[in-house]
Amino acid sequence: MIATSFLEISSKAYRQNIRYIRKEIGPKPTISAVVKGNAYGHGIAQMVEIAEKAGIRHFSTFSSDEAWMVKKNSTKQSEIMILGMLYEEELEALINAGISFYVFDFERLEKAIEISERIGVPAKIHVEVETGFHRTGFDWEQREKLVETLQKGKNHVILEGLCTHYAGAESVSNFVRVKNQISVYYDFKNYLSEHNLFFRKYHTACSAATLIFPETIMDMVRIGIAGYGFWPTKETYFAKLKDLPKTNKNPLKRLISWKSQVMSLKKVKMGEFVGYGNSFMALHNMSLAIVPVGYGHGYSRLLSNSGQVLIGGQYCQVVGTVTMNAIAVDITKVKNIQVGDEVVMIGSQKNKEITVASFSESTQQVNYELLTRLPQDIPRRIIQ
Ligand SMILES: *Cc1c(COP(=O)(O)O)cnc(C)c1O
Image (tube, rainbow, N blue to C red):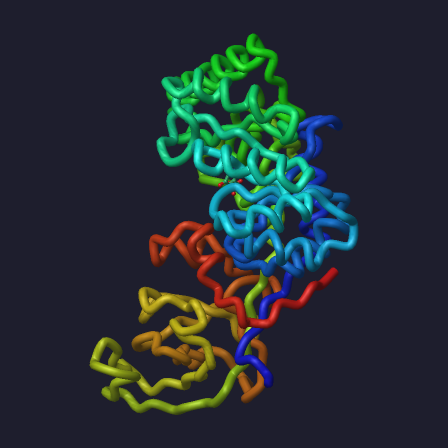
């Protein structure tokens, strides 16, 4: 089967991003490559290969199915950490496989201890504490029971990590809010230390925190979006801009390109409508290229009459509505376009570029969402 579009994933761009992050954090801290959401749409299999080649030996996933995917594709026995969902039935297999996981409630913690004791294999647990995100994590009020439970289980499990996730680290203006969260994290750390509970890795930072709140870096950083070459927000970029050398104002490089080809050509006379409904009427005689990519492939309907693609090195606008499997684009001004010519939805052609940001701004999707909505069955090819 030949797909109607494909994604190219650049391993060179990834190496550059990791080099930049490494420079920011110094030689010591571990970089955990966050590959949840099908590696932010880039493909887990492809990203594990690319990341291991770039020296990464630690991966974070949201769920256990993703963790098994990493395991299957890893050739370097990298560490794997589950940040979120797993089923109790799976705990034993995960523990046996040496896959570490977050614990954020007593059910999972007690179960992990119980299984570790029974099978004689220590679970590697990351104790997540609540500091302000208010999604998962032990509350400060639970600290006594937490200590009690960890003390009891200490000889059966490995205290792999003490962690939290910050709310608002993507914005410098949340300075006070983030500072407060850091301080709550240290309260937990100190409290646990006083009760003789020490962890192998203290880790709290995602991309944004790593870049603009360096005090959050500690023993490990969990890098998602920046690894894929995107600033978490415009603000994080502006905050870093002044420190960047004049010669390279954008050290983060996009890995992903999304390409298809012209499926067919069409002439439309002035006054005729294009596509379903009547959202687009030709105001002059037009040439259209039909591209076999639609909302079913992750090309949002919100890009109807507004999205742009590159054909023949020129920006060409989507006309009419985006349908399930196709779009029509205006190629009236582009010469000599033929069926089979390359179409770029994201990426470069000649000297022009369509970035994920420009693409998602017009639909109000943030980078994260657009990327993870790219269907898993679009082929991903690793390029240099
Ligand atoms: C998704 C996630 C990250 C990575 O976030 P980025 O902003 O993509 O770097 C880090 N930690 C946790 C707990 C996460 O869920």
